Length: 333
Ligand code: TYM
Image (tube, rainbow, N blue to C red; front, side):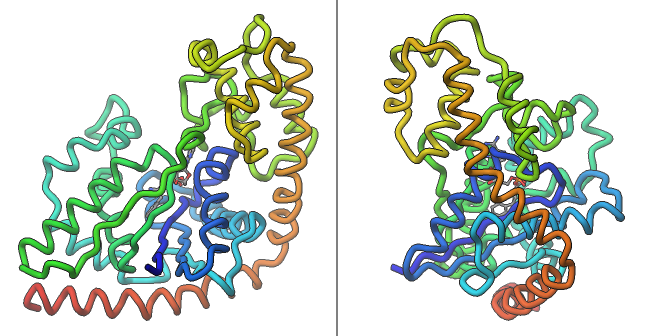
């Protein structure tokens, strides 16, 4: 069966190694598999659920697009566009918001994390954000959605919304419940400063993450300063699981090298950190520096990036405006 792939990344700056290993690397692999139809979206409507500086937002949209291309996405093979250029995402989101239940949204853990202690001050957009995400996915009849572990609950909500719409309107196959594609081992890359916290764009410490735009010296410095402990590298995964920072660094090494964690454990067991960090730095530089150089090159050509987004949006618009029209007919408009 032909796979229909959809995924998105927020243009909120500081795209990092977690976004790359948890999501974008997989986008590229799926694009290059035979017969897949892939749609990759710079989700700028999602970005404004928290305050954005209008001058910086546009740069971030272009930079995220540049990161897609620099990582290996090809606008001739995949549809690449930014969400705000395609009105059906907003329209579909409103309709699905009338299907989703408050109780479902109240369970979303990411809202609780992002809103923090003062929920009353969070935007309504942040609360209903998973509904927009459901519209993104369902408007393309997506069958598979590659994401990191943190988006799993939102994917389940998309499935619930699809099923309830189909049930309410007695249209059993109209909205397709998508399958999440979450990598088995490396779906959650952690902060370099705290192995129990996700690597995140919004962490105030730049040393907590490797940005896809980091230069060689910055990468080497960040890995040198990454938190570890004093013991030698572990001999097995039982010991590894008790040492989150070490598990994270070995996970990054394995994922970038396309090898299993146990192979990496064997490679370094009993060795000291300076030797491991040296090898890890070399590998990260080897994989990430070409992406960083290409992002910086593409960032100088706004016209090229804007044209890709516009062309992609035209293709996305054709697919989604048809789906929204069908939705409206079903509803009775
Ligand atoms: P966003 O922009 O926060 O992250 C983009 C992708 O990167 C993954 N990711 C990580 N993976 C592993 N380790 C990490 N530390 C890490 N941090 C982020 C995320 O899981 C995600 O796959 N709501 C989404 C964007 C979105 C979307 C969609 C995704 C909007 N509509 C429809 C799929 C389908 C988000 O905020 O991702």
